[in-house]
Length: 465
Image 1 (spheres, helix red, strand yellow):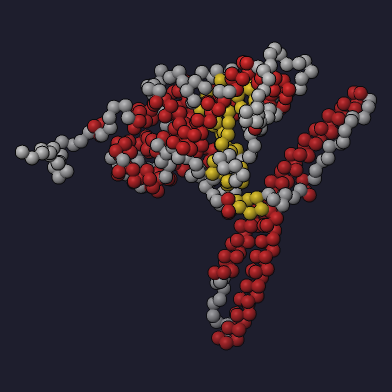
Image 2 (cartoon, rainbow, N blue to C red):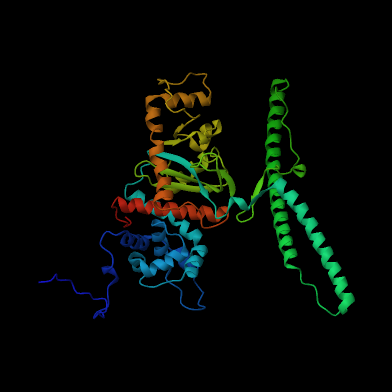
């Protein structure tokens, strides 16, 4: 007797309409996302449609949010791939209600409501708080370089802009001279009735490049002027402080008088660069490939130690982190409603000003003041630091105590796996949007979906208390 096989029903018409809820097993991430989105306040999105009765009926915003959140959770940010998944992936098809918005609709919805979508970060964070995943006992802060939606080869330095501008201007003038000579010859041959005002393609290309270079130069010059104005204000404040000190002591203050720059004379550094694709992105050192650089942004995250929930997220153009500590702590307090007990950060965040800033008063800071060589033994410290210790020496002493070392050694284990999960597990290595504002909102969207995955994996219910 031959082997028996189960019946193949591919050509069998369904006698009853299928239920979408039969498509996914219980406990699937897709069901979780569907439940979570029901609890989120999407009023900002819905209100944007009020009074707009034109055209065809729009797709349900709730359904579109489900698709985008699930897509970002699974590392699928491309609108084309999301559209394709609504046909080929059961979970996407379930979340779309067996509808198939095209990629233009998905991209337009995300772009239109990016601010509102990023605003869901705090709502998801509140769900994590209610589920007991956020304790604020220890928050670790770190940054990672993320590629911009632009190539570093599309960037040009101010010095090269000047050289290229001069060369292109000469080429344009030569092409115009040639065009005038051709026009003159054709007028002599055919008469003046022929229309010849169209620019040659080569001339159009050179003129468009020249226009872009001039715009980029003007932007760099504006930034240099703004920086000079800021430095002038700082220098004038220092001079005023010196005068006040001299008036009080009756003696001339020591040291050199601060130099006050003239913003009108400020010029960009020859190596200052501007990218023609995403002008707000910057050339930054690639933390993964030492010695190499990428065109991108510095993405910041503050992560709670309890369950690696991201409690604050931001993006900056600055390549270094030392100006980001206080703003990130302020974001944590604003998002969660209270300040963390302890905050750890690597040496990139160290500056004496960060330690004494009034916004971090009452927080137990653990910030490395320098890099420790591999295998280097550091003597353990006990008791309080010496009374005459500088801020740097006091922090170094603190990190050598048993309590300080036990807190700081957890920093890597708290924050760095989060970046690994974003880049390696979910595949986010490049932003989809351009411009600092849009990139910052997309980073919050990436981080909030990371928090959703934490909530899902810890088996917490999304129901609001």
